[in-house]
View 1: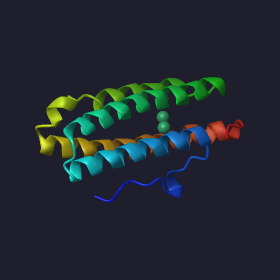
View 2 (view 1 turned 45 degrees about the vertical axis):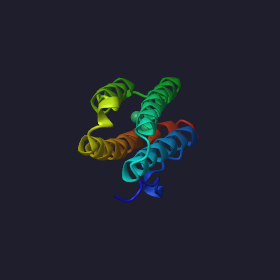
View 3 (view 1 turned 60 degrees about the vertical axis):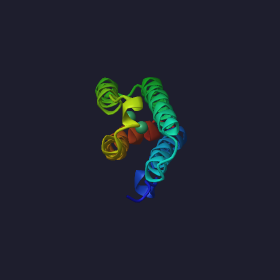
View 4 (view 1 turned 180 degrees about the vertical axis):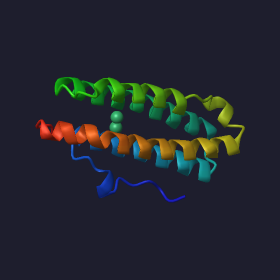
Length: 134
Ligand SMILES: [Fe+2]
Ligand SMILES: [Fe+2]
């Protein structure tokens, strides 16, 4: 699997959102590296925990922006966040250390989750840009 990249198509042109998406991409790529090179399992658990924390922070950032600019679809977008966080981060990091195939399916899940998440942000970002966010 090639590493993920924040291609121009995935850039939403709101700096804080793009920066956080870039950080999430970096962490998922790091997860991939750890799995490919069978590095220290502790490193895997650490990076997954960081990814989970950054995701929560990222969702909060978007929710504050939506609030600030009175985004009409805030409620739906927030519930998408809640559902996706629940589904994506429902794993036991420690158990993954002994189960490489589960770890690899988690990686695929994370990759597609992030791409879906970014595409779901597009409409919100368009609205925020029209309201002057940058
Ligand atoms: Fe996002
Ligand atoms: Fe979002």
